[in-house]
Length: 228
Image (tube, rainbow, N blue to C red; front, top):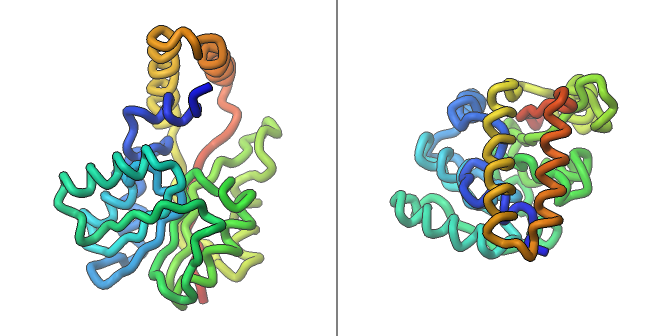
């Protein structure tokens, strides 16, 4: 069976249910600039890393375990003329050593599962951020259906408990969720037609996404906590 993210993210660069412009609006609030060094865990094809480097001129270390995403990301970075700013590290999150107090911001967008969830992610990334820097997580949250462990205020509490008071956050809109999910539905359907050997499993995943659209079950937000 093909890895599902190779299917649903095959035409995606940002790979999250949010417009890059909205994400960059939050990043702008963090004061990133050409002197900044940023870490991104679970960098995928390098979309956020490229946006940060292009918009702010900062240096980005992009850590990603999936080799096809790394290869595509490096090609995109080279094509955009950003090779001097964005460097990829082929590694899973736990194997990557986060150097102490090295980064002005550490991002993990939609990939906190790499550290077994939000709490593990905050604990892993905070030591690598300089005083006055930010730990930034993109995370789903419950909107009243019990489909996620925490509501958005409870996510804020997890930051606060780790002495990372929330400085900025931004939420995905229904339209952003719709666009993100529509791309997944299209790619799942196309893949099941083109690869009948995977058709049953892929089509089951597509039906699950259709069922989830009957009513929104979760939200998604990018939250930035400031390190003292």
